[in-house]
Image (tube, rainbow, N blue to C red; front, side, top):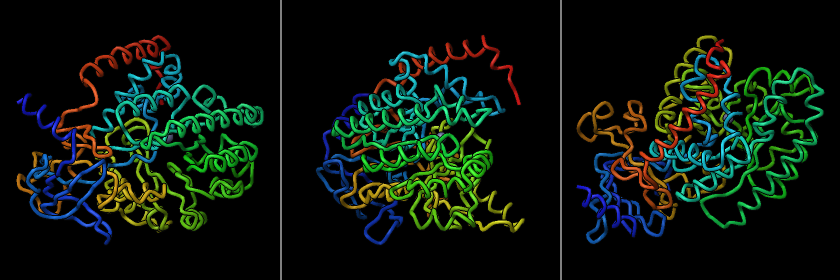
Length: 477
Ligand SMILES: [Zn+2]
């Protein structure tokens, strides 16, 4: 069996190869359509042919006949390194800033281990691309090292303010703290721009730059002007949290006399592609039309704040016609699970809000959620060659077993998308980025996963010891 596996692996690595899919979600010029018994030919990192029928003789075969093959899932909002250090300890309300601050004391190779352990989970669950808002420069450097080594697609940027100043500015007790932070925030945006140019100069087509800012309540018109100039200089998308909570909305109203969305418009930050995470406190009746007309992409994060902690306005964004993507954010790295949660939580939220008749809502379907995790973020970037299985598109894909126990009905089902509502990342068998397989028959290929997890365990034990020494585990809300 191991010899057979390595033989299949090496045949597929050389390419070209054919994917025989029980079902595939394809685009042959008429929008997304489900195709049964699909055959996808992958050549030179792209889908060369997309059709139905038996795979041709003479090409190595990737067997996905028990699977639904989707375009690679895109997380439009991540902080990759921070998943393990927060997951499972913050859901009851402990503040998660302290673990993040302790991460800043780690050596670069230790941050790489955490980045890799989290990124491996994302790949395992079918997430082939990340819009990565790194919480600090060391984490952004680490993301570029690991994603670059593994051949993962990503758009990294550094959050401004970064973790070392964030709590001081965000949870300030006086507006003077914000005023005093301006020179450093402008300097960090300049450093982020230099990072972005250096990334672009690498010439890696899989890793491209964005610019990031933390949120509207940690910026001022002066710092936003510096951000606007940087965006114009770089000609790249903006990645930002928008109206994460009511306090952000209220602070922006008090200081600048408008909503967070209107502040960004006023400062010229809605001119290019914008990916705005959370938007929990957006007034959709007032600002929804502006977001829609400017093509701002709302990034819904079903696991934001920890699984089960928050509810976010995906149904409101859909009703407002605002392009909506899905992001993993920080704590869950399971892309299939979060597509599922977007539907389940969205439908519960839509039903609850419909009964109060206070805002327009539309209950998401699983087809819409898959679109939110694939085509919509790609289109937001202006990348028609991503987020779809189409002739000529880059061959990023994920194959999910929809016949196995708990997910499927033993046979290949007639309506495969519905089985995603019973799936999670453990049902993913194959994952490829740019045609290169990262997961094959459930085996993680970029590096030895057991050794990686063992290295991560040592770091996590040390982090937890430090937190325990500070009595952090005693804090509850
Ligand atoms: Zn975030």
